[in-house]
Length: 393
Ligand code: ADP
Ligand code: MG
View 1 (tube, protein in one colour):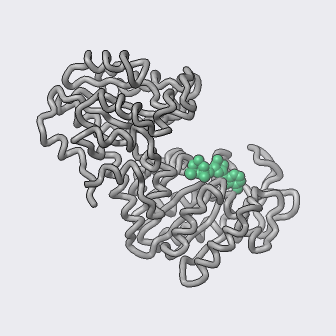
View 2 (cartoon, helix red, strand yellow):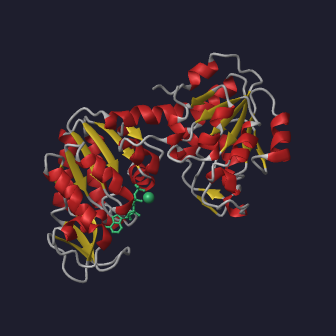
View 3 (cartoon, rainbow, N blue to C red):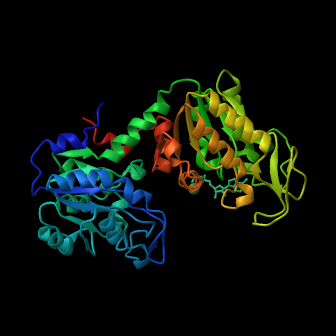
């Protein structure tokens, strides 16, 4: 089934039409200051097209987890001036996303003008996918665009409940582009290499299971690797091991063993006494008591980079070590350089993985950086994303 895109909507005369755009402006905020603004930049193409067409653009988004309550520290207000700067046009802001103030703000909006509404999650109805809340949001506009890929795996009022109220409901350019690029991992040029790392097996178990029978190779790094090594009876010192996930790790290795992926685990490690900048560290093949693994070792990093060189498709989620600390970032850097230098189509997802790629200056050499961590993992597993399914015609 096909997901209708923005071009279909733009083929009609949109001058003066109220278009509600569900964006994912869930940016890192520290005391009102925006950190990385990648998510704001990512939805600019869709917004620019709508503004150029003369639409009256109303943006809705969530920010953080205010839990259905109005919490000033989670206000989207600081996003409006940044958006205005990036679009080089004024962006007005409304203190609520539904009700009188929102309606009045939309009424004041002229053709080719843009309005950002306050955090959807100040209302419990958003995450509850409440029908009345969805209807109240829908009443603000004539057409709907979902460009919030990072939230497409959630069936919330603004991503699914709202859709039946519109005769025109389409995917924005970001959502469409994410689906197109992630499709490359679902139906890959082979061999497909998956590089999985990060903090926990538990958050990536689904994708590990799915890829153990879909990928040719799975290279495991990060803290996750120690749960696998522990499951094989290897010494892991005081590394992060999820005892309750060892059976899952064994199962993934069994699936892989019976005709599935070749699973690669670290053969050497950077170990430290503490996860702390300046803590004494060294490279070992076997982790002694009292030490913990903080990065894959140089031989492992070279091997994983070599796999990237011979793959035709690479999917990467999760850093190879505690990359936030310079001396534990080498494994992540070596693997990132290998992926960037490879001829393979490369897709990287996950907030920390993206931050690592960006801080290394390698973003331009990756085929696709996915803005959705959880959503990209679910899509790659073959799970239907509710926010996408509801748009399909
Ligand atoms: P992503 O956001 O890319 O999906 P995760 O959130 O799953 O990645 O994991 C990233 C985190 O994992 C980082 O904060 C990193 O410091 C941590 N991490 C990676 N390797 C280790 C390790 N060996 N020990 C402890 N933490 C680790
Ligand atoms: Mg993360």
